[in-house]
Image (cartoon, rainbow, N blue to C red):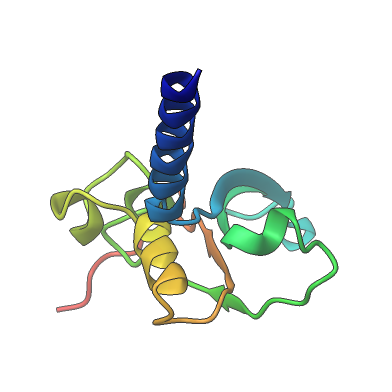
Length: 132
């Protein structure tokens, strides 16, 4: 009986240690947003745009809390998928990580306050020519 109790206590302690070492993680969503101002544009681009959104770790449990929102633009040679997930090339992919993973680490280590990160996919059917 004592061995079973000791074993159960050790398993509980091990589970608590593993749980304590697991950092909190935010969530990532890719949503569609309709841009009324893009309807009937001359390039023929869809007015429905993909938008990547990172929600901080406490967002699921603190829905009434107000969070600062940072809007990011991905740049000419990339897309929101390159920053947020397995997709096109980016510095994050070559470093074997992603923006949500970096944000999780910064927010759980105390290096940054929790915030919402938003990045639209601004890829158009006719990309602008690079300036020389």
